[in-house]
Length: 442
Ligand code: ASP
Image 1 (spheres, helix red, strand yellow):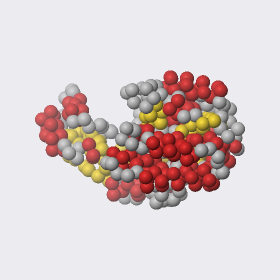
Image 2 (tube, rainbow, N blue to C red):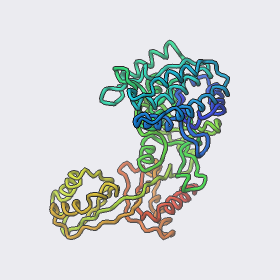
Image 3 (cartoon, helix red, strand yellow):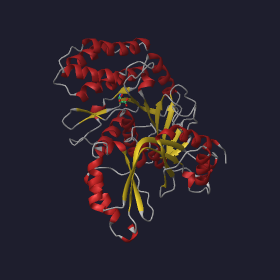
Image 4 (tube, rainbow, N blue to C red):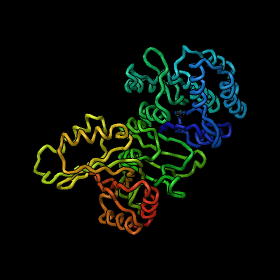
């Protein structure tokens, strides 16, 4: 058994947090490849080291002194270094970085130093080998990861160094320049590392006990999801659930590596297991029929009506061409006989609303065009929706009993989600009603 374990910034923010990580790694000998973020927040108002580094870069760009800011960063690492009783030459590492804090260095190089230093410290603390991600994670010049080369590089390294710590968030282009992922990208590094060495599991350790059934800012103490499929996770994330960096899933999914979300502060909590599919016995362990609920506000529904529309071939296509011309991505297209609606994020039409309507009028000569703004889309996601009859009925009954008017309904063709549109003012209420419904055991 071979596991890649990734720890997020809040799990690595202090010496105390480091000691929890050590306990977790030492509790399971298969945790051989450790991926680290930069130190995150120790308390609510704290600032992440990565953010401090972005500020350093901005100071350099505008020729503002960077010493005070860099001193703050050094303090973060010194606390970890002293608290963990480490011996490496940390001041030398600081000097090396300080000598690169100038206009010649790229923003990617500067911000990557947060992960770099943390991995150096963690490697010594665990007695593992430090492996710089610039030495194995290859980005092509087009900014995309070269998976084949990265996999080959890391698997060769691991053959000779079975226990390693690697910094997350960055790699290098073939000419050796540091390149980072977008924010939160250490999740992706962990997934690529897991795929590279064909790990049996990728554990992503964070500060919550897994992915929650609903947003904890809306629902009090929601239940963590025990098992979720990659497809369900995609639906939940797309609709606003804040889980993993969205590019994380691809490498592990492609190699069928199970992904666990675990809590560093509660190492024995089960967490959430993400896999391609679960067998029926496993699924039957839980009687909940909804896996999760997530949603986003601020959509618009544009409804185009024309009598005898169904006789006019190409009518919807002409409408979609207009949206394409305006570069507007479409979320859903619910339709009836003489009308159809196009659901889009309101942000896409803010600056072109009048031009868009004029173009639709010209292309379609409709009887009417109606726009509803301030619409929330809420996804009820669950692989068990397919097999259970009457769930949609229960959902609509519960919403009706709570005076929530449904503006749109759509069920995905694979029947793992039902999406409903409600007014933004009912956003939280709808999620609460649906969560309470999902808690009723079948
Ligand atoms: N430290 C980086 C960030 O704050 C990357 C990460 O933590 O995943 O975005």
